[in-house]
Image (cartoon, rainbow, N blue to C red; front, side, top):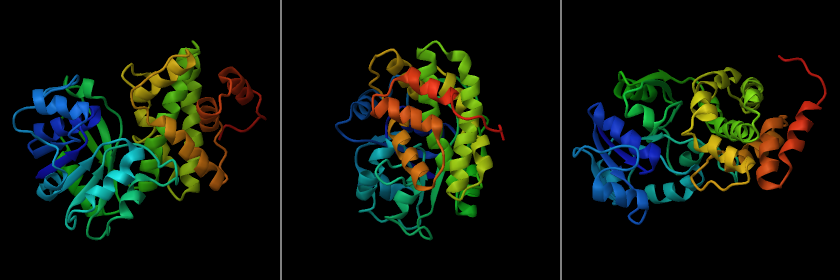
Length: 320
């Protein structure tokens, strides 16, 4: 299968490496002036992995789109709309779009598949989401994990799972696009909260954060029309180890450095996602205390300790 992976960052390069490893014809496409693309084009490697010669590296977006049966996109979620406007200038009929990124558009509250479907006809250009746990640093060592591919098109997700599965990644077929996308995006916000607890030396509170965070996100998924149980699957709870505990998690690290008063420059999708989720919570009348606390700390300068104390002083509730 001819696959073009658009995006040369940490995860995009890992996807290209993985899909080549299991036998597909892969092209890795990035922006010509982006440091990560320049590194891959010049040295065929980055800080995480080395590309075999079988992976083609190009900055020619029209070429990358035209050659592909499947287009995998792995970029910053807040840039998807502007980037896909460029992609959509090329013929897309008969191609499958796979979104391997986790976020919600902050300005609209839209899921990423909804953004793509503004530019495409889903009957002619189906959209899928590839979500779940894992880090490039583990995959390149041969450490396996489980992930999910979801789509509103049953045949498409079945085909992708069959084509992408291997001994390194066991894929499951998702059954809830709303839950898969919201759950995957929201785990990054919970990851920032976990990092804040690490930065405060409150790491023992992360167990409670996991339990209550999953409940909180399940309520939002249900209000949006999804299956609340999706929050307890691989898209969200199943990704907690990689996001709430891993030293490689950008979102956890962002929260930790934020709590310590330090700056963390790498992409942490949970920052803008907290804004998007709070917007959805207000629109659908869903109480999101953890998301709200993260948002107020990041965007309104709220005192972290006061936010924690306020959550502990909330009225008594049944657990379920």
